[in-house]
Image 1: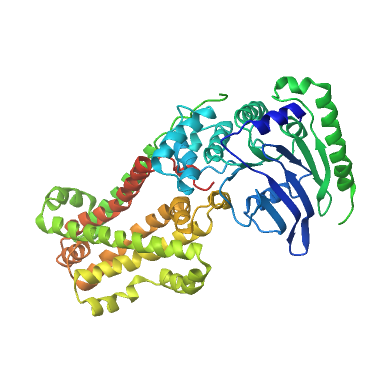
Image 2: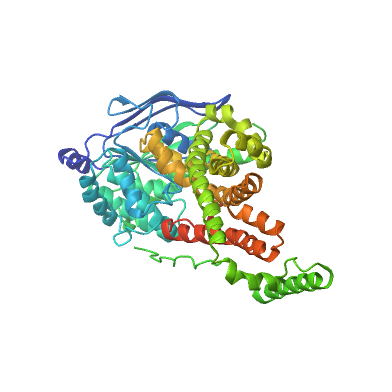
Length: 273
Length: 267
């Protein structure tokens, strides 16, 4: 992140204030098995941190701990408040979309607002706004089964954005859509973020996606896994398709790749536990 | 916008699709055999297909038949409604609360497996030879299949849905009605079909035993007075009930639950 860009961001007050995530000594055990141990992680306000790691390293579990969905040892704080249960202002986008098949696009997007106790006039005002923000205008009455995977995730994104979160937790949000759609959604998310920068913890198994989206890429690995590297992505924003062509993008991608692969190879050829 | 195809709503599924001609031929062969055997070897009063067809127009407008039909269907509808309300409530509780399941599980399964015939004498003792005994039998026959189905459904709500609800800080009651209930719907519909059949059996059996009117009594009375063909008209109506109920639930599902497609219910 360039100094000027961060300076501008700090100076411009956005609707969503705060969103500072602090993770200290987070350890998740299932019985004798430790998924991750002693994870320390800081995500600043309006920063995007991409979390990568080999499959099974506990990226998604870590994200669920930050959301307060599952308990863990250690501490998760968002804006100084300890997270033990899901809290207002933190919203998650799910890998398999998590849309309710019995609700229309409109009702799915409205769900988070209704659960937050927002009054109905306000819901009626905001839902169409977020539906058109993600490009789903005209599909308000469609049911999820009538939508393509990409459109379903647009709906999942609108549902999360509608509650005006300080923190967005992204659980491999584009892993379940095809490659072209994935690329389109990545840039749309970046466009939305530019308009309203929100703190984001972004779990992905795609190295390119991590480097494209993140201000930092955090590599989680080992058994039990720990944070192995914290790589600052000093690519200019706004990022676009042109970002892929920058030599620096290739360098960073290689760096993340080699960090990950050294371990992946070791794991692949490891015999026994 | 990328792939913006909206798939057409699944085509209407009729229950009577398939190889129509062989099916009709098989039916006609069976009816012809019946007709032939009765005409050749049985006394006059035994029902024949032609006899039933000839009796049909007379019977279906006769006051005793219409009264009996209204009584039986009324009792089935009333009993099913009660069974749906209480069965769903108990099923949801069992599916979502370990305590409720532990407390009720064996009892529900015991009653589910129990033939309704054995409780009939008790019900007629408690309620007398009245419509209440029949209603109780219908409820008893229908409720446990709904409890078991809804319980299974509520127990196996996809974890993803519950996680989303939890993440958006939904309350327990809200999650029960907005997530668990609709997610259990395929199970509920499966249970309801079984319940409807059992409810009808319950009503007719109660009528056999207690002689309180209705189609069961109509059949019993007419066959004992050697009006076999007349009795059989009522039997045909009972058989048609299954088809009718199935069509009704299919229609209601399409009309009121457009998102629910039976072919993907197992998803």
